[in-house]
Image (cartoon, rainbow, N blue to C red; front, top):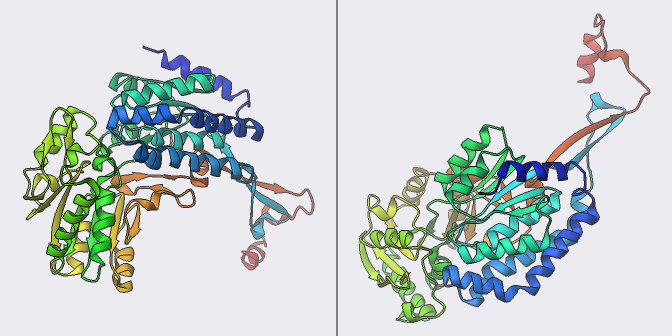
Length: 455
């Protein structure tokens, strides 16, 4: 196994040469990354198809295009992000000026998942490079083809003393987490996130945890059901539901349940035909373990649509479950697959209370035409981010941070928020030599009335 202590030591030595900090250096690395992706786009899409059965269209839309957008935004705005920011000078600091300097943490670790193995590796790496850090990148062993491609990318583009990729599984993860990094960016499950945070605490290393959870959908009595079904079906079925912000379950007003289920079935048939397992656009489950776990969840409630499986291809048809109870297995864990339980509510406060009783979700989706309902849900429910009258698309922008809260994560990224996440903000006061007001210096006798008058 690779000597991780030496790898980190080499990167720390390289970082201390100051080579990663100049604007020209950072910009050049981002442009090199952008050029490699453009030249190897077909290989990237092929790796994603090998690992997850993603069509070229879905692979480009959800992985390559998002990374290109992040790179374009970083290249265009890097100089502005790097500039010291002025801050207001408090009266007790006068005469002087206050500035905030964004400085890189140093040697960072980026641990990425298997469900969007390209996008969720490179998007945070763009932030690490932009902020002037060195980075060790650890892609998931489950997405083996993309992991190998990422290793080739890093080897071809970067000196390992600057950026290195480490392939492997749990043994390599454990070895890396024993090292002293200056910042850790982890995307994955809450269970592993707890372990990452525990290991980071040994060195007081700051972390960003991009986790998951059961992201709810509320469909109220005013919702446009046709639009709701179309956008809900798409959001649930992208990557066969293997998306951290996928709609996990639906709470629909009981007066609209039948209409919604019928509209969802019609949309699923329109998108993926009546034989989705034969559809070349329909992805597969990442491995046998997750496939078997999902098949077990099909026993919850009643299958109102779908339910077909193919063990050889590890595919599960888009499935709608009705007559689901809160105690069913499908409601006890994040589904992370193409299974959508439908539950009902009578009063909005009941739906809100059900969500509040659970860990804070990474995403929440509300379908309504009521401004009052929208305001109440936004006011009363804590969640990482979400959409009103849509799903998933809230993360497809460099202009808002994406991240969770509580058990769904901590920290956010995308665009400048990625730069900020991988930076420490250093606050600096610069004072003039004169006048040097004696009010703060001892002795203090007779000065209280003056300080109270000023502050």
